[in-house]
Amino acid sequence: METTRQPRLACPNAIRLAIGLMVAMVIGTSLLVWRPRTADLFCAEPTPPRSSSPGAKSSAEVTGDSRYVQARKRMVEADLRGRDITDVKVLEVMGRLPRHRFVPKDLQGVAYADAPLPIGHGQTISQPYIVALMTQAVRPGPKSRALDIGTGSGYQAAVLAELCKEVYSIEILKPLADSARERLAEMGYRNITVRTGDGYRGWPEKAPFDIIIVAAAPDHVPQPLVEQLARGGRLAIPVGSFFQELLVIEKQKDGTIRRESIAPVRFVPMRGEAEKAGR
Ligand code: SAH
Image 1: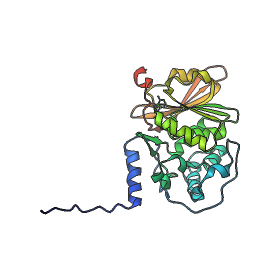
Image 2: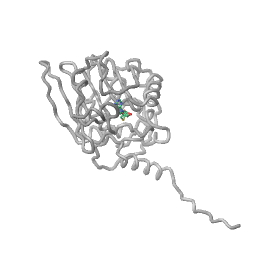
Image 3: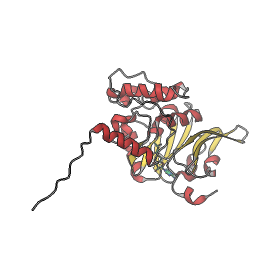
Image 4: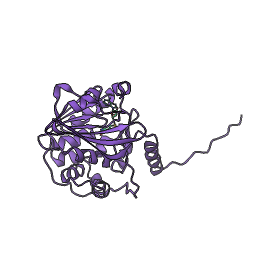
């Protein structure tokens, strides 16, 4: 009997990674503001870790594999400082945090690329620029109490934990919440509490919050989140369906609300009550 053999396609790792990145962007599970530039994805020259700042762990403990130090430096200089990220604390923290520990093993080589990356369950870790933009917009301080909605990999929660006093993080998908909780505990964070649940209603028992960051887009601003914002507090949230805008909502000292749209974005949709609630 004769059989025909299918030619085998050669698929070197670089091509697979490029395809992975393209798929991540195209399927729109992205948290992406795309500003085209040549990204140097594979920087891996070892250099000493940078100095520490206040946070749950010292930089030597959390920085991890020194192969990634150069890649992080490139990310900070080109993708963050090279755009409009000017908050030195945000730049310092993101230049130190081991983002590669928040992505699947086979994507660690591109963990510092200017793109969101898949983290399983159809979700993504946000593009670094977006994490920086949202963090800068809510102006965290050492006494801030933060609410992070859409824990995902836990990366945004870790950035906040380095800059705030306490972080409360809610993730609707249990497997993601469990793995993020485990990862953050392993990395030594003791000021982050992760729970599985629908973030639409916030976390009333822990309110009010000085900072709220939302990483999944509803088509309207959930009223419970505005209510749980402390006076002087700020909420960064993507709103919309296909076309979304990143809103920063500030509750002034007198209780009045100021609202500003700071960028067009593309986030995963907010699941749960947001899908039913409507405007
Ligand atoms: N901040 C994350 C980004 C995760 S992507 C990180 O740094 O990796 C957005 C996440 O929001 C997804 O994990 C998704 O499951 C979650 N999500 C969607 N709707 C949600 C809801 N109503 N409540 C809480 N999490 C939600």
